[in-house]
Image 1 (cartoon, rainbow, N blue to C red):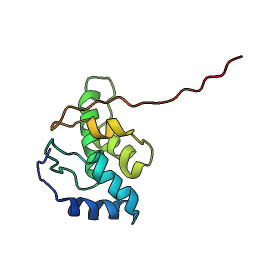
Image 2 (image 1 turned 90 degrees about the vertical axis):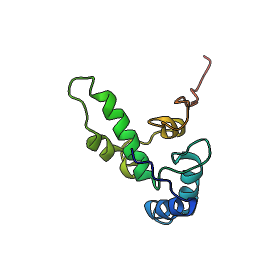
Image 3 (image 1 turned 180 degrees about the vertical axis):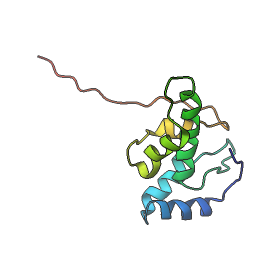
Length: 114
């Protein structure tokens, strides 16, 4: 993984392009999900970089199983949030070698009493 550090302005501009001008989506991605170290240095410029990080890390594990998906196949599923939309904690934590991060996400299961 490349260790280039991006400025917030670079990441915001690239993310704004990725999200086709959606300022809120771009800002939220940069603030919450872009790969950072504990000092706040940004190592991803757009969600495309994040999708490659996720794809490469999952492909690394896939190699342990029969008929593994390649990093490219996984990336194609992630890119543009087209087929797989990871939740926040996994987007931040999978393949993050800069910080220890939880991969857990909360969810709600409906309950009805009969």
